[in-house]
Length: 289
Image (cartoon, rainbow, N blue to C red; front, side, top):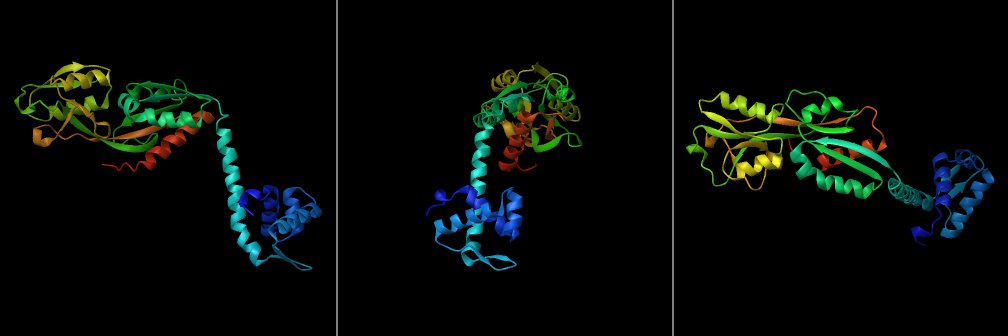
């Protein structure tokens, strides 16, 4: 007989008796009569052609066959419950408002959100990209979840990963010939902008701001043309650019922390997204730098 032919109700009765070692207590836990549970166990034994319990006047013990069936019965019931839970996921409806950095929104989030939508097609996803420093204070109002970049001393939110800030330029650009060094940056409020300016000011090298934009794509396009250098995350480093280091005469930059901020009154759709994000960043094994 295959496992698919075993009635889950009979298996639940079997597990209850096995755990309680009593037909009376098992019946009480299942809200059934003792005779009903005894009938179920008899049916299961008849189907298997095996005795599952050794009965005496004052105790019930598992037979050798019964001991062997316990783990299988639990696994069968667990799989059935898991299947029901997965099917019910598709019935969850609602909306999640997500705020995230521009590069994460274009590089990391799309496949994550696609997998999330496939699991929960009834949940509407609203994602806004931009400078997340201004989004954090609006979690619970304008956003349900925000993935933001912080310095190393930040304690709020939940750490997802660490990102090293690195310099980038066009593969054809020789930065040693540039005086002053042209830099493409994001507007005021961007952590990388502050780090870049502070690091450059500590060097003897002359530099100038050549381009400012809210748009990640615009900054990368200007840099790809050899018109400036910029600062990006190592984990989302653009393929069209070349990474620079201290050997190129540029100062080292700090490491940022990527933290997840969720509303304290988050509804089930947002809670599910938070779990998916945690699982993703844990599964990819991105190590701290």
